[in-house]
Image 1: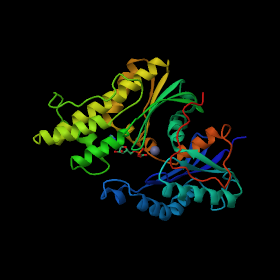
Image 2 (image 1 turned 90 degrees about the vertical axis):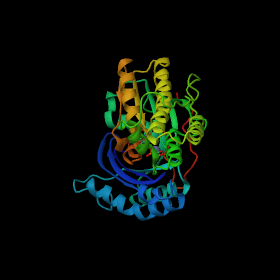
Image 3 (image 1 turned 60 degrees about the horizontal axis):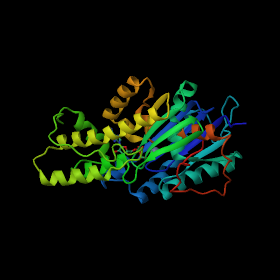
Length: 347
Ligand code: KG4
Ligand code: ZN
């Protein structure tokens, strides 16, 4: 039988998060503490700082998640409910960060005498639409998962059966945003800043500058290193270009490719729905583009709110619930795996 009440813990990168989710659907609490401010002055996530911050934040964040959901330190509620399992992201991510969450989850599982459930962070992102919308999600579903670390197109035939159709062969989409922003002298994380100046009206729509669309018609894999290099070269050659013009053209190139491949994958595989996930799913041009193209193609479109796109522990607890029948529970001896991947196919 699936454990009904699950405490989820997420520490794979720079968000310390804990959440209690009931039956993979109902979020009783979701606490996320972002470390962006700690890393911004270094222009990216510093692994040692992230690990140390997770250690400091772990207990307060777990306490708050338990308290908000009505549970005490023994994992019990006044109504007589209890936490049935503790889940944590075991990978992929930064090893020093993952270990903090995994150790905390295992300790609680041991003290409360409940199972420890290890979760693949990417599967957690993929299961977010089901956490929010449950049975309303029509299948097959094609999800574009775009973050600072990953760019994936995944076909899901059931919540637990999926096939990776494409991934990036070099930079992740968010990584390309962050690198281009850094080159333009914009603050970290670069995605929201580029998005803002590209869409602010300062970025011109007439082609002052145009960047290549990497691997445009080739399958479902992505490459973003070409557009990144093209930006660097063009800005050096034409210093008069404004950041807004460059941001606009760069965003157009990245979003065009993301949309083209996602919609093509949906069409080729007879999908009923498309969804976005990961931090880049907050991008305004990507959201507007997939909404318009998805609706025009007769697809159900899932655009999660930003809080569900970025790292959180509700998706970890929900993923543990969805996969409880499929995955064998990990014993307390199980460790973290920084380079854990999605299974290429579970279908
Ligand atoms: O999923 P996420 O919070 O963390 C991981 O990478 O796992 O994603 C962060 C990434 C960063 O690269 C950030 O620049 C990008 O998402 N991002 C955006 C936007 N908001 C965040 N990229 C483009 N447009 C945005 N509005
Ligand atoms: Zn993530």
